Image (tube, rainbow, N blue to C red):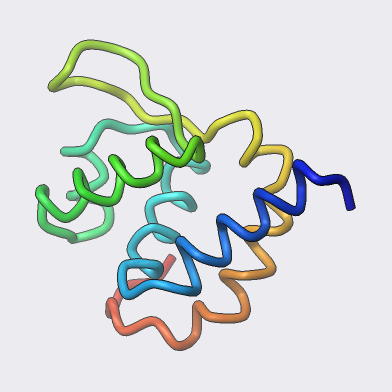
Length: 107
């Protein structure tokens, strides 16, 4: 495993499995991979409060897992190239912890 892949896997482990907001972040990643959306659309799809979605999107963007394009309100989110390339690592972590999710929603 390359150093870059190892760093991504550790980051995913910390952001998804190692924190209370991990299940919501994972659900956002899955939804964005299916179809790039803005924060408001993600709220509707996931049934999560707007401020919660914005908070988790900010964390994912700061850590280079998602990118965005467009004006502020209509900003559309996409998975980063790095996360697309390492999506198997994300799936491995999410499959391991996803069943312990208390968010009440299906991914």
